[in-house]
Length: 484
Image (cartoon, rainbow, N blue to C red):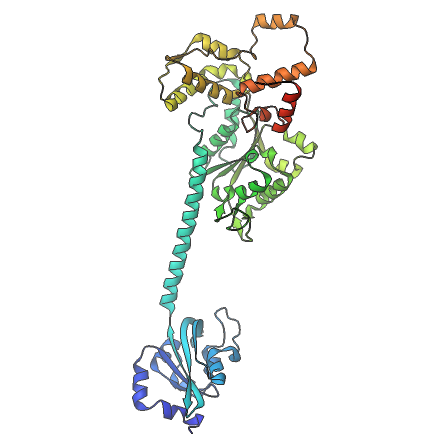
């Protein structure tokens, strides 16, 4: 039987040594005590340790003493030394060896037991430096992650842009030279190129989103996205996913990871329309994101940092909602840094000619019809109307007239003048009997419904204009016997 001391001389014969010295992999021979009995030149070159320095010494203590993170690597955990004890061959693909100069390199190695007449007498370890392979794998992995992230971003932006493009053609509203519109333009120019939060207030249909777009286009963020969210269009449970995104499997129906609007708006502007519709829970989460400029996707604990400029809009009196306990006071003050009030159309009637001209030109192109002018009588009708639906109602009316007209001039014959009052009508109104509260309410609801073509729900519906839930409006219509 060969003793452990004879291991080197019996298993590393001259002809074997020549072969082992010629291969490019590092080779170590160990006796049962774990001391080195053979080291080939490739091992010396890779580790910087000379054979004379290691023969007879414990190699684990020299260059396998620590993990890649620098933590201690106990000898009893080392696969090579475990093979010395149990005689089981092992292969390791994720590990590092330490060089003499204190640096480390990734290795693939195997430990093979050596038997003599059935008795375990030592181990041979063969290893190779896999730095190039690891670098290539890491580069490929990073490239794949970048491609996947870009694919997700493009998919999210494509979905968002498709939504944004719906109904944007022909959107006007800031045309005119009235004192009210000039003051609004001055305010936009003052705050546009700052990162200050802007709160846009105004009635439905006045053009609050157009103000937000103007603020973005005049800012230093204009080359980055403007991302819009209608807070009234999503339920409380869905809104969080829309704002912050979600991971695959975060909830039923989350079949893939999706970026939220905050993430899409990074380095750009986020426009939160109808901010008053947020639930108190959503308001709390929004406040934290505004303060920290960071958030987590639904179903994830990873914190995502963003750099955004926030613009909010509402047709409600937010201060009144704060007093009613419907809106957080701290969020209100965070949003109300620079308030901008968009005037209703009835307060800037002198802008009607410019507005009508812009809208007719835009909508004619959209509808592929050649409309050249608006008749004087038609423009007079428009100026007499009270416009409860503001610029949005004007746009919808012009679009309908362009569709209906058979010539190149718009006369607005279909315009209902329920809301207009000429001098004679005011005189007539003075002689009419006063309405009861129910009659006045019924007339107001009816007029509003007619202004929006009897649409009840939705952001452009009568319920939103009357500042009540659609279910409440339907109940009032039933009680007051209002029908189309």
